[in-house]
Length: 449
Ligand code: NDP
Ligand code: 2IT
Image (cartoon, rainbow, N blue to C red; front, top):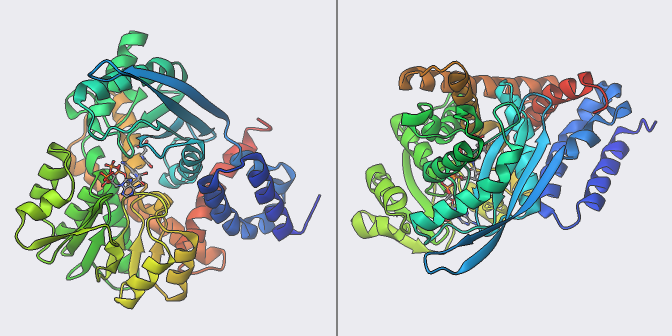
């Protein structure tokens, strides 16, 4: 057996490249985790002997299927559906579904891979998976979205189950889509299996705070990070990219904690509002009307809309990228640093490029990786599963308190693990090592499967 740890890690990475050609986002996610694991392999020979890392890098199952549907004019469309069941060592596969035209196998695999470690960090009994489709819900009627969801679930249902695989939302999949997906699952299986999906409506098995959980959780994580430095949100200028589920509730919690979010965005551009983003208007424009972000500036006199451009040029103390992968590159990082930004907290999955992370680190900016900072969503999904299993309902206040405790716990675990492994303050290493150790121990215990 090779005892040169860096060489072993490099060989694993080269193998991943060779076996998954063209899946650049997946390569990127694997590289980042592997870079943190050299310190672990040096202490745990058994994980090299049993090829534990190699097994964790290989999904347990990958499902790709055809999703045919008809639009309101009767035209036929064919989309591609995916579900990557990555790792079930800690519990049923758990992770969201993304509907966006950019979805492909590499993207679903990067998200599934990240999910494995994120879910482990929550301390809840959930494995990791992810799915979705290259379907674009933008501009589609409710009836079209419903027909698409029904066709998607007609194939996916056979792979799901409350003890097998439990999807939820992600980009392009919110309460409306979860409703249609659940209805079709129930119809096909003739089972009211509440725990098969999370993010359900509050009136039919959904949990309080699941809607808010990812954004609130990212703000709680940021607050814990600041507290270590004797700092808080009070009086801070904050920018939050995106204006979807994660962004909206990150903004809400930052405001409740005394910060001011001065900018947010969507794929068409960003709005700057020095008086602080008005959430009622934002929700009306983005959630109710499903319109473009410029609609916010049309309604709020203190706001201006910047078409295209980079939201990271807007001066801030704290940046919370909450839109999509690789949205914050090295140039954006330099712009943030030039304007005095001190904290970058990932609300989205892998929004910061590896180069940008290096630039931020060299400048001493505190950085929180998504698999730790955005884990509040899936953690609250696990609380939803717990409530479904016990046919119980918790109050908003109790659920929010649980979420805050979980986020503080994840921060503490990442922080302590980084110190233990000789990299104080490095939450990327802390999250990767702590998440990996939890999964690896279970994988090892289950034998060669
Ligand atoms: P939503 O669909 O609710 O919102 C996505 C937002 O990001 C929209 O404002 C959208 O703009 C913008 N966006 C999406 N893709 C792009 C793109 N290619 N370029 C620019 N802007 C883009 O999704 P969520 O808020 O749920 O998800 C946001 C991020 O958070 C994703 O990375 C997701 O994986 C991650 N996440 C989500 C969790 C959840 O519970 N929902 C949990 C943990 C992480 P537009 O409307 O113009 O497309
Ligand atoms: O990326 C994520 O963690 C999510 N989209 C939420 C997954 C979930 O199962 O709640």
